Length: 124
Image 1 (tube, one colour):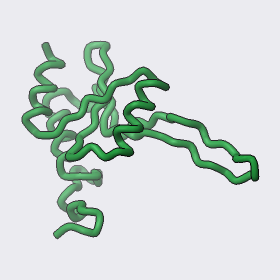
Image 2 (cartoon, helix red, strand yellow):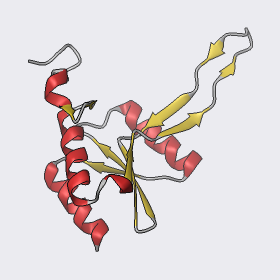
Image 3 (tube, helix red, strand yellow):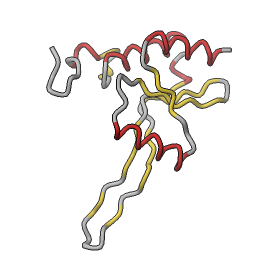
Image 4 (spheres, helix red, strand yellow):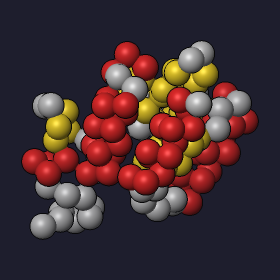
């Protein structure tokens, strides 16, 4: 059964004591661990896209950040990976901001098959 945010129950997306945002992200983590090893990637890398500030009335405006699923550093090459079922308008906007501010592209993986192909491509 899913909750109101259409996310699987916590116990179905927990692996090694880590609660993931989705079952697919958990599966991707498991595959990266098996085929690359934990030393080659980190979870939830965060990038600031716009700093916080105060408006003309003194009201605090929060910063805008993008948090990816994985940052993989394999053979000296960095890959920012996001496991996506659906790209929302907010995601698309943040993707453009990330490219502009940090010159980073996101590798969007949408299936287990694509994760495995991505791992094979990195290893070549």
